[in-house]
Length: 68
Image 1 (cartoon, helix red, strand yellow):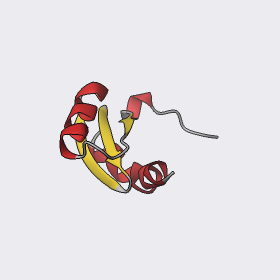
Image 2 (spheres, helix red, strand yellow):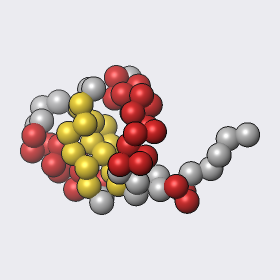
Image 3 (spheres, helix red, strand yellow):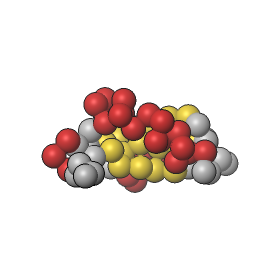
C-alpha cells in the first residue's frame, strides 16, 4: 500500500494545501490535484497511462471529525 502510506505521511500538509480537493497518487508521487475525482484520474492517466493510480479526497476542516 505505497500510495496509502504516502497519503498518511503527507495528510497534515495536504489538508492545509488541498482542502476539498481530490489527489491522484502513483506509488509515492502526487501526480494530480483536482476539484473532482474523475478529473484527477484523467490527469493521472494522461501522465501515467500504465501505472496503478489511487485517488483520495482531502476533506476540508469542517468535514473532519476529531478523534477522542
